[in-house]
Length: 388
Image (tube, rainbow, N blue to C red; front, side, top):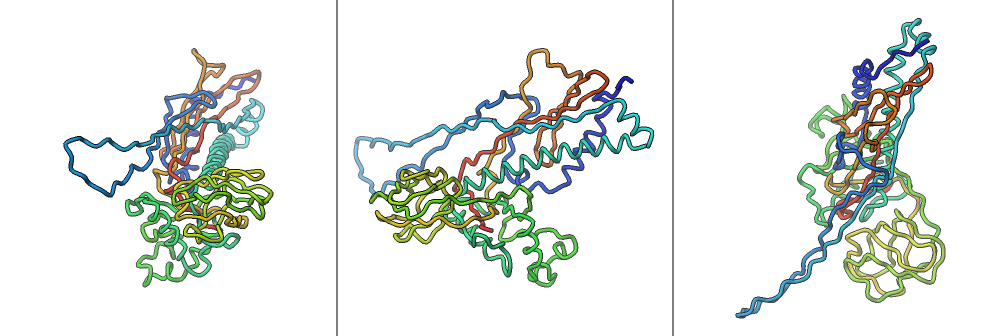
């Protein structure tokens, strides 16, 4: 029999399904800067550019003269991000199946549920992507790898906050979030000083399970918190006597094995030791590993042993301006494709954009839901990892 379902007839269900998904926790999507535009389509691997300006030179002398001194050089670099991530769900709608569902009064429930699950599938893929990008784009780390934080206190929040503060991040403007996994969330909710109303000053955590802000940091949960497997590198040593504060390129020799993006590394001695740095670009053998900005917090001597930290779960604290999630519907040819109807669904809660299209075939229809996206850490200085 003919399948007469049209996209316009499903509009109410689509938006109701969207709202069901929007009510679920989306810790990363609601904390980053979302660059979403439902009317601007992009090509696969299309680039979006941004600029980064280096710090100006600080002069420590002043000499009056009739000749104006020359300005100091300022380096401006152009960085770009390509939208190479695609999330797509194709939902078959056959006439026979829909008639059978209609006969048992469950046709609308099925359509509602399958749309909600489709949006959820896409949202989870985007959350996981953002979590991995932020993990690899962090400046430094605090906490104990392999140990879920908040077992007895929430001190690690202030330790991560200090990293951002030392890096110049504005931590008092209400735009900093700590996104944690559910295991850390459980420990957090079990902290007695936070659920005791006389100490916390509110019953929100005790009665409603709301994660309270700590030290001006918004605490959120996400299933997209990434896990990191460390590289295999051992016995690496620095191979430069010129590693000073701010250095990001770290020449390594002597050792063997891999250093991978996201590894948390420490140095044995020097003013820059005592901190856990996150690797931006690793190595497969002796060569130059690159740290995320702002780089070393002090000088590191030559022949200084580098140690790679253990595997960890990457709970991350970051400022909204540090991370951008770019999301667009895919480009279409002039005059459209074979879709009989289409609509762009924008979720104002998560910022996600879904391109929903109805394709009519032989004895069946297909709903196609597609979005293109890419996350980018523009300011690693404004990201700190809370190891778990």
